[in-house]
Amino acid sequence: MKKISLLLSCVFFVFFLDAQNIGIGTAAPHASAVLDLTSVNKGLLVPRLTSTQRNAILSPAAGLLVFDTDTQSFWFYNGTVWTNLTVSGGGGSGANWKLSGNNGTTPASDFIGTTDNQPLKFKVNNEPYGLLDTNGSISWGMHSSINNNGYSNIAIGAKALYNNTNRSNLVAIGDSALFNNGIGANAPAFANYNTAIGSKSLFSNTKGYSNTGIGFHTLLNNTSGDENVAVGSGTLENNTTGYSNTAVGAYALQHNTTGNDNIAIGRATLGANVTGADNIAIGNAALMNNTGGTGNTAVGSASLFSNWNGQSNTAIGVYTLVANQSGYKNTAVGFQALNANTTNYNTAVGSEAFSANTTGTYNTALGASAGISNTTGSRNNVFGALSFASNISGNQNTAIGYQSLNGNTDGSFNVALGNSALTVNTTGDYNTAIGYNADLNSGNLTNATAIGANATVSASNKVVIGNSSVTSIGGYANWSNFSDGRFKRNVKENVPGIEFIKKLRAVTYTLDIDAINDFTTGSLPADKKQTIVNADKKNVVYTGFMAQEVEQAAQSLGYNFSGIDKPQDASRQTYALRYADFVVPVIKAMQEQQKIIERQQEAIEQLQKEIDVLKEKSKTR
Image 1 (cartoon, rainbow, N blue to C red):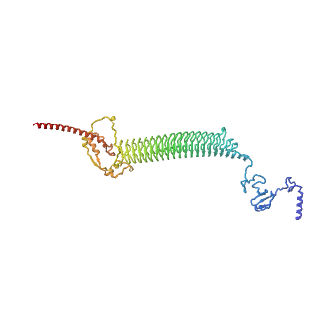
Image 2: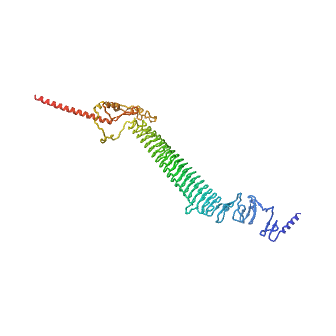
Image 3: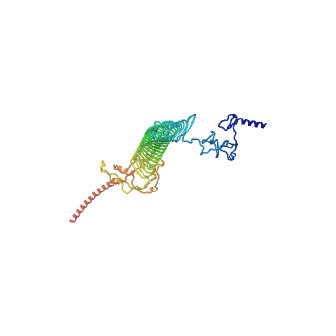
């Protein structure tokens, strides 16, 4: 039976055999094929070897084909090496890449692309979706850079760089980014060097160059503005022709149209600016409402928040100058410094310095909470933390030192120099305190001066030098008092001399320093009360008069003696004597005494003459 089957096969084989072609399963083998296998339900099964078995074949013939069971792929011998058909095409220079991934690749030789100087295009549904151009341009996305002839451009996103033709060095990433770039660009520099990253970033740009927009709708309406930088959603969204602006943060400089040279860093910074120029805003909502103001600098959240047309203002710190709208040439440095200000020429450096100021002008404050309550006061100079802290409407005051003048409310023309100096003053004017804790003992004195640490003046138009512990006041020249006859009126020679001097009681005494301190500062807060600094002062013996006795002596003669410093309020103020004024009645007394002496001398001389006459008469007898 087996012999009969073999015979029939041979006969069948020979039946289909002609001189040049062999056909299996077909009576008409193709003329170009040596062997033509035809079947509708079977395939050709080539030898199946492992990689080791394949590599062990001795002297394989070029074109030898096997199936590698280890790599699960067909391999052929190209005359030199075995080649994987699923990685590198047999006989061709291209690659046969699998859609499900590839392995065994050689990066130096395996690639997708062209080997001639032609662009590589990608399409989806026969629509342009990508291009790697020979001029250095790259596009990816439906109709991105579809009309591009420029070089070194990158367009990623649907219709990115859609209308660009011959403008170069552009980057457009995002839906319709730089969509209109190059339309009407008739100068070499126009519409070049732009970078747009974000949906519709720089969408309307036609001629503007060297712009950078990163974020949704950044520089959306820019047409011909140049050298702008926008980073963040909506930044510089409405800019049309403004140039050299920098905006970093969502909606920064969002409404700017034609303003130039602005810098905005932070969310909504300079968000309302339309035409303002040369502004710098750094911080959330800094200069947010500025529309036309120029030359402003705001650094800090909400600094210069309300400003809309104020110019040349500088605000550094959170909420600095936050209420300023049209005030100009103000400087605020520190948290809430000048945050209520609306007017001009104020300078505040320090947290909450002049934070309540509304309409005061030409004020200067340096120190935390300096001038914190001032609203309408003007031309005040304040240096020191908590200095001038209570002032509301006082003008032209100067306070230098911690808490100096910090109780003043509407007093004006006062000067306080030293920590806690002039803190008691509230409504008094023209007062001066120099030295630590130098002060008044009443809040409404006028033209009073206290000089020295803890010096306290108790009356208007009075000067006190030193405190109760001072034992010596002097220098190297005598004190000069005004005395110019050209300006003296109602001159009278009515100064009592001997009679006044005779009524004076000269005494020696010591001072009760504790009682003096309690009397002059006892009604003041504890931190203002004076204490003994020099304990030895209690033992010093002085020579002088009692002021009350001098007053009584003068009154008994009807003499208005200027040497008595009588207090207006004896319950709060002390008596004092101007000892230099005693020289005048003393000299008057000497003059009166001299006249008495001269009269006595004349009487003596007359008596001497009479004696001499009597002597001569006695001799003649």
